[in-house]
Image (cartoon, rainbow, N blue to C red):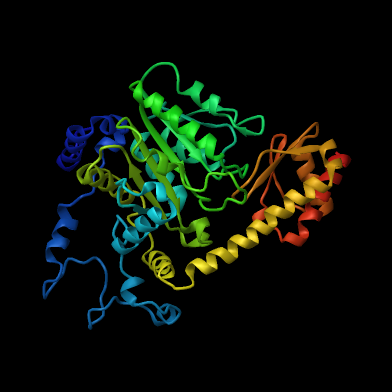
Length: 429
């Protein structure tokens, strides 16, 4: 396929400024661009003119967005923050706010320059855009063997990726040597996917494990590998135990090496309990990058967004942005965190008090997020799940001999009954 001149221009910027990043791009990533000519360019040139017949929406006679009263009366926001299209890059004020919040939530980022986040339709779409940018058919994605099932649809079915997994745990901790082994071998392009807190296990590495992971990745980059690290931060901030890494590993990787591009995939979805609003972000970090490198990556990402969903919801972005400016925002966050931590603590207490449960199952390591997992010792997970549904009115997720339990959605007072039901179902299997 012959490349558009605008794509060629972005590629040349990356080649001249950081050729390693250019080499990381997929064929789709090399070909994509955000169109600044054509209709979009002409519309931009007409902005602010007294007569503007370029805009692809309808306006009232007073120049405000045309709208229906049955919808408009339900929304208190200014119509301009609701009804028109948002940019394919996302609302600039939200992008800037989220970037500032990244620095506030990750002090290790201070002094490191990262891209301005591009808005996506939450994490699934953000992950898909990362796949668009970096995955060619047949590319391996290195990741732990316990992962969010939707990765398969996003990366395998859509982009032809091949998962190259290693056992997530070694003893009671993260299997750092498993990651090291997967990064060995032939020098070349490597894609790594890390998700902490992890779905399904609810595990975040310790402070020491994060340092080991960082050093392993740096060593691989120093050998000449071109490494893309996709950081799925869907559950960022929900850590319930001391000694567990509190920042995003993105902060460790954002300027680690010229051969390593960190791609942070996050959003308000779980961090701010707005699952249905679908507001996510893609942010890039690589050592030595300047504004031109990041602008090229942002333009390509926005082009991929435009070519898939056009743009994310203006209303959703506005709601999230205004929430961040509310004086009680952080107080509300702490209240919800306290509820989730209470449920987490109750799970730990129940398992500690009922040693008989160990006859049937053991908990996999967990310390954060929405979930925890138990591993059945001898029973079939699907049969146990069916008994739970039919006899005990209880639902869990079965993954072979592992059951995923979303304590995030279970009242603290019901947690003891939940595990007692699981134990009884194992006995009856």
